[in-house]
Image (cartoon, rainbow, N blue to C red; front, side, top):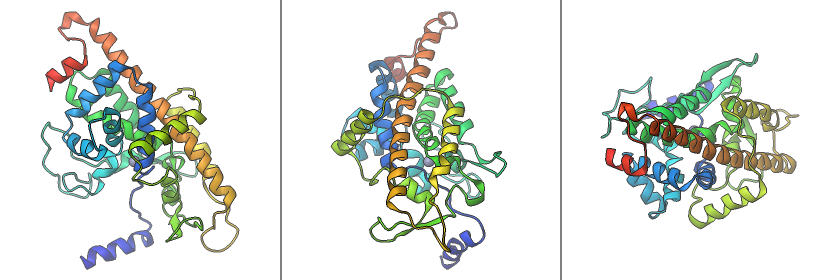
Length: 316
Ligand SMILES: [Zn+2]
């Protein structure tokens, strides 16, 4: 234990750091609630049926505090972060594999999926966030295996949110702001935090759920019109450009102290990015599900039935 603790303390000194989380749970729920509003009734049915077959569905339902499908959808968006300390899952390159959960799901935590970091020349050098989203949306649009949709969906809900956090398209030199400490005088308690953590917590308290969550999402939607849909490349480049505003000006030795102007500007950016991620995620899911239903209804010769909520339930 002491050795583990020593390693923990040494990691930053060695230039390593613990992987980033991206928006906290409140941020991911807000993105999901906005996305849910973009879905048609049939897509909501499909998505809910797919999530209901996930091994962690019961946990999401408990955390959501009831049967509301929108609230369960929002909890599913936090799953990719919640498995980071869950002993049923393992780290790809450091742990021994854990047994597969019922339903032959992948048990790896895939920490590298949450970010893509760039070197000074603008080349992607770490992480695979952007390419992974493309793969997941492809799975949802094309797979003939319902269990793959069940696996891909929580990842997609989460990663589209991550890609809209400017420090998740980070500078590899400081690990996306993880190695950049700042002083935040507006925070009660510990005021020294990493810049990355500061950004992750901008959406509000992690416990945001229920009516307060719905109200916060409704406000974001009222204040932000749907953005151009674009694609993964656009979302990544937008985040990279925003990185210029993500760092507080530093003109003294030691960690920069954030001021009112910086706090206000970063909050404004964060709220806009959450809204954009929500609108885009919803439309992405809607498009991909529509694509598979149209293709499969025209694919009668191969005996593939159209994917409806009823057929999904039957498959599970
Ligand atoms: Zn993440």
